[in-house]
Length: 84
Image (tube, rainbow, N blue to C red; front, side):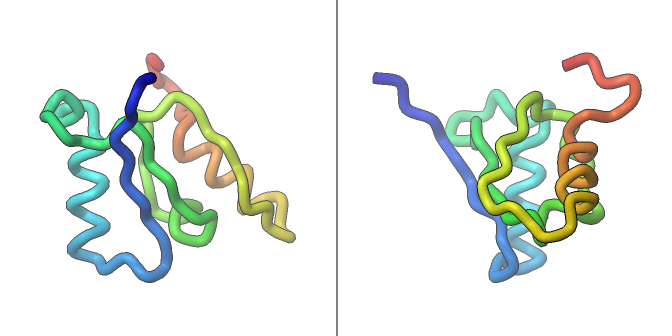
């Protein structure tokens, strides 16, 4: 059984905690023990203002009425020039 470290980011996450989660998820800090392998977030929290090129998969579990918001969220992971 493999265990994954994860972090959750949603509308109730404070700005300070949000920054800490995103920094610990980044590729530079990803090898630190306890840093998250999986980032779980709501579309509203993750669709705007993020660059998540450290990730390589997106699973949308909370579909939104606006399909373009989902596309924007996926584009946070799949950026031009990304090598993952």
